[in-house]
Length: 257
Image (cartoon, rainbow, N blue to C red):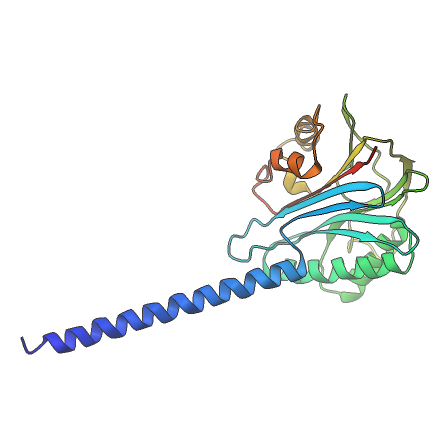
């Protein structure tokens, strides 16, 4: 009987410690969630912009960080154009997240300054080379002009854009350009084409591509888009964001009729 108060005290102290730990954990998760959405929402239906209906989704492979090295950008410009981009920092963890944040906001700044896609990538490459920390990344940047329906894009070692209509899905040409941070003064080329009413354009990172044969993985991703005529958000719901068991990001833009 004489030991019961001590045992009760120990249990009470343990319960308080456990409760305090749970509260601290909940607070840290809340902070992580707020920061994640401040940096880049994991799932975001952007809506109708510049004659396009756009939806974006990103999935982090790390369940603790809940944000990875993949990023996207959807940015209306003062001249009426719309800049769309996705990118992927090579690597994982906090270092990749830190690099992603810098690249995403630098990309937005260069776009606002009026640089075309190829020049945006050139500036990002210079930024990484100057940092001297061996960070590399892939990216694709596209600018849509609603007055003409023209889409202009450039890539840095990135998978090809996929163009979908009601009949088929085809990969668009990949402009020449190495991944960011690999070479000191590379050249980045651009491609252009008309985006017709009802066409859909998919920008994505390699986390959307099933591991194995790269070209076959792109074909499998394209197959998921064939014949789909729905809101971009509904189409993204059907895509496999766990195909590569890695960070993954996809941006789907439909030209409105």
